[in-house]
Length: 624
Image (cartoon, rainbow, N blue to C red; front, side, top):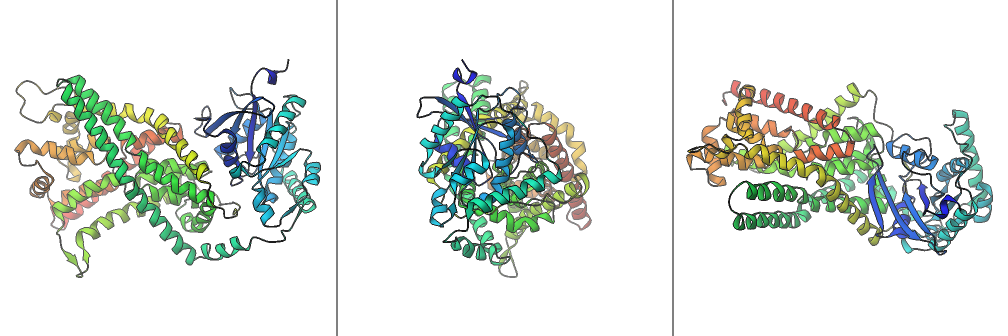
């Protein structure tokens, strides 16, 4: 009895990006799929099971997209190692299914020739075959099969066409081939790469004839969307719409989640006696879980647009348009959307850096994403601007308070680009890796595919990010709660907690930038979420009994802080060390505590330097 007879056959889907590979995986497995990470890396591992027409149980693995087994990115390394059977703890696939965009075979043939060298049975799935037919593209399938020495199946993944034939081929290959093939693939030399390219072009010319009805629609659309001026204007409007939607669409569900957890915490407080247990459940666990799930609507809205842009074929064009502009700061073209979405929250922005293949380009984007002004900073900005910036017009048109707010947003963007420039020009010498990609044909996104991927994103966020973020939130509760105030204590409880004592201990270090101990105390719980600093300031200044509302706190701060101190506080928050949930997600995305540590240290340094310069400049100008 063979090994494949006693365990599910393993089938790996491999192909170029934008070939419809994930759509085929979704069509084959539906909701019967699991998402995890490959051991030791953050590359996602998607696997699902199905039963073939012959009754055979098959485990299908969706490998990251690649143009070649000559791996250059973490995703491509995983694909290469999976195909070659080098992944630790995993058996090699029994059958390889190479998924190709039938309308764009020129590039995939080089990958096909490499897969042929691997020596494992494989089948070529010509996906999006309906589009090729509509274009009048003539593909000699029989001759192509003879040239590559493998069976070929035509498929339309979004319509589930050709799936039974594909699975029948998988059945046949697993039964008629040994699991052990002759692997002759190795890292090719420059001469071998040129020879493989020439061979793939020969096969293409022999088996593919120009379309009788060329896709002129794509060309006409690209003439506008890729225009250096009109294309950038359209992209700006589109991204502004995405940016606004992440704010507006997510507000109602996020508020509902927040209110729901607040109500749940209220029920706990009502029905449990006041004490440690009630505080731990309400302020630690419930508040911790709520602080995680409140980001979910933003993430789903963000990924909804990302999926639409990717499935329609526009994402690659947006990256192409912005590549040169972002490259000046050492950023990859694909960094634009993650940075834009970070204005809502750095967490979904960092998660969306997965669209960037190169590790250094992705790390650069992750490291500067928290410099974008997220929505959590807005309550702090609003409080300080309302307390210290006059409500007046500039040139009779613009609000001075609005201009200050805009300046804070612009400062985050400008310094983010400067930090990227420093990282790429000093620490990682050289420009960002050139953007190389094929522009796919425009197509309508498949609703089922979009919804299934959204569901997958939701599970990933709740299952993985939650496991890291929740313990961090509980830690903040511990620091803010213990020890309890002594008998007869008159000050707020936070004064006697570890967080409060730490604030007073650090206060001398913060004095050169104009911060008092109350501000320092607010910064510590503010690590859980930046906007918490406003609530902590209200708690600290409530000693006098006149800070029971936002307006009263605004008035009190305007009396007790100097303008120089207020401006320094704003400067600090432009670069404020990211919240603990962001650090947790950076750890998960980079699979290391090194990069969250680097991020924390450099942002603390920038925040301190900016606050120091602003404070002493303001004092010198008479604002002290």
